[in-house]
Image (tube, rainbow, N blue to C red; front, side):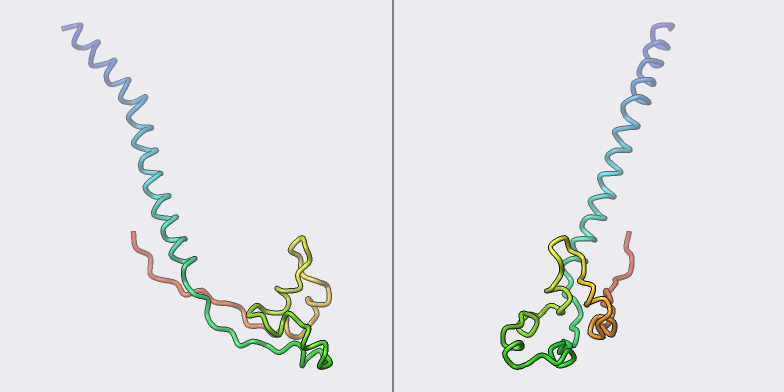
Length: 114
């Protein structure tokens, strides 16, 4: 009888020591995969169409400058095209009316499902 009790005590200890962390890790993996799938679905959403501002008109660029301007042919806003190499915006973009009056992009959200 003492052998069975000892065996059950050891088995209980092993279960507590191994099974609970394994189950907890499996649950964490499950929820993180669901979260990753949700984020990937959000990343696949197409951005809302934004009316392109014509910065060359606001800044008063000449015709030759307009023809050579990357902002005129790109689908990105002008402040995105002319970012500094480190990713920062240029000082003149921060005070420009094109940047200040630009609409804030909105994400389409779906109801939460768990």
